[in-house]
Length: 222
Image (cartoon, rainbow, N blue to C red):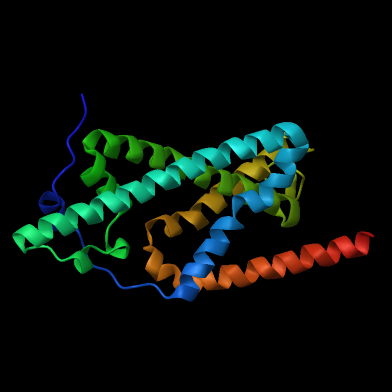
C-alpha cells in the first residue's frame, strides 16, 4: 500500500523561516564534511581491507550516495512543483516562502513520498548520525591517547597507541579520552548550523594547517 503525498497546505504551517548562510560559510561546511572522518580513517581502512576491497567498498558507497542525492533532487522538485501548483490555485502559498534553505529535507520527503518514506528517512538518518558521531569520538579518542597524557588508575599519567597496545591501562586511557571527546562533541549536536559559522571557518583553517604539516612531515621522511 503506497502512501499519498501530503498536500503542501498541510506542511506549510510547519515551515519556519531562517537567515541565509553566507557562501564562504557553506564552502567551509563542505570542506569540513569532505575532509572529515574519511580524511583521517581512509588510509587505515585501505591498509586493513586492501586496495581491491577498499576500492570496491568505496565505489559501492559512492553509488548509494549518488542514488540518495537523486532522491533528494526528486523530493525538492516535487515539493516545489506542488507548492507552485497549489499556491497559484489557492493564492495562499508563495514559492519564495518555501525556499530550500527554509525547509528541512525530512519535510520535503514527507510531502513528496508520504509518511512511510519520512519514517524510513528519519530512521536511516538517525543511524547514520549516531554511527558518524561514534566514529568521530573513537578517532579523536585514539589520536589524543597517542599524543596527550592522561591519568589512569593503573599507570598514572601515560600515553599509548591503542591500536598496538592491548593492555588494561591503555584500554582505560582510551575510554577516558572517549568520554571526554564525547562531551566535547555533544554541544555541536544541539547547536544550529548557522550558529556554528565561526567555528566551521576556524576548523577549515585548521584542516589546511594539518595538511601542510602532514606534507612537511612526509618531505622530511624522504
